[in-house]
Length: 185
Picture 1 (cartoon, rainbow, N blue to C red):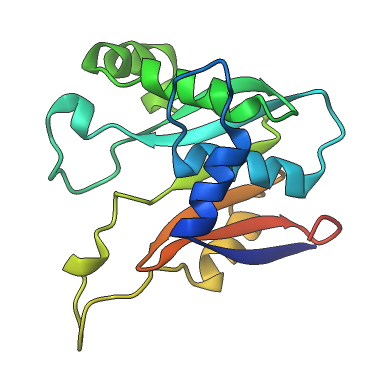
Picture 2 (picture 1 turned 90 degrees about the vertical axis):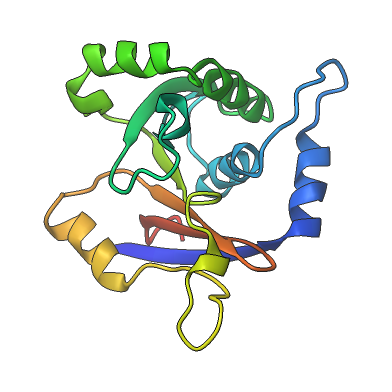
């Protein structure tokens, strides 16, 4: 059985997480997605010293098409230690993937840039992809979320076997939906 666990972090809490994972020997600036991925790894309590992560990365900017509408994503598959060093390795991998040459290389390596082998966890950040202020009904949107049908389809139609997390924008911070087996939730 599967559950959706939804957590919320304010911008101040995200800043504290970045401080928590900051390395004294490194100048790199960790993103909110880097540190939230590390937190999800801790929440899932994986029984392994090393983990296979899939980071869903959109590549519109790398191809000079920021306004492109549609799926412009690839999976960055990476092995990271099950430790507080994980966000630093994630940041290095993401930084190295930010070029048109990398996107073109990746698409020659795997079907549409997607890796279809097993992983411990898949992370997908919609932060900075969806601009809340541009979604307007009676007023600007406060947050974005997915319907339960999305997760139901993952289990029934896609036969998901690994946890999946989505980072979603919120006016006051970030929401994380973690789709995990009930024994972890």
